[in-house]
Length: 354
Image 1 (cartoon, helix red, strand yellow):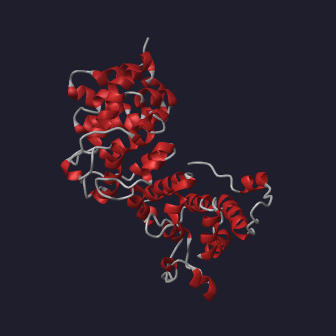
Image 2 (cartoon, rainbow, N blue to C red; image 1 turned 30 degrees about the vertical axis):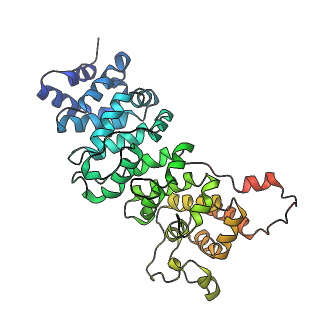
């Protein structure tokens, strides 16, 4: 016999909206404490929840909250993310400037893109709302929504911070990395240039997701010249500022630094999240893959900043990545044709995508 909870789950598909609403309100806490009750009968309750995303705003809110919790489970995630029709509903509702549950949709999408099949978003298209002033490529719409929608400026119900995690996960795929460094015809902007400013945003979620996106795209070594070119992406100030505090440097070190780092206020603080600091240092290490990158980082006094980060951030993982980067920066360049001991060097710069 079904338990009382299992019977209650059956009521989320009841034709009476008041009964549906009462059932789903009472069931939401169990999506974390007893998620198995939603996985019965070959995931029929999950299928009902997907349908309820289009119900009244109150019912849709609870349905989305439950789905966000349930998609932490791989079986549920695979089912939800593989449903192309449902993905279209999520994306279409997400960009609607009047959508009351846009933040929950962004959170759900952040889970869905963990499914590898959603690298298909690299080519997916949908009509953009006029208010967004984007083009039909979904990736562009998500980025424009992330930029224009912060602090309720596009949709008064949402800040779209969780799209930072969406773009971070998508940037693990090679084809989507290329998108981030390719100038878009409709607005003439390189996508990475739209989001780099958020490495210093008040939202921890935005800072973390953007830092991870930059790092993932930096795995594409061919894009490093554009990363470092002041007239293209010019990423260094946006990586170095978050890991820089109010330390004082000697005149020679200061004068060699990038202009953005030379006149910082006395109350300047480095990012309080050690995971974000670690991610930025790992990105700097990736940018030392080429000799040109190493020489540039040396010439703009990256070493003193990393040295101070190492001594002032009490986190073993941060200190380890700082030491790894320092080893690369302080190492003398081998003469052309000289043996470099590749295996040891590879271990020094081993970094994984996030």
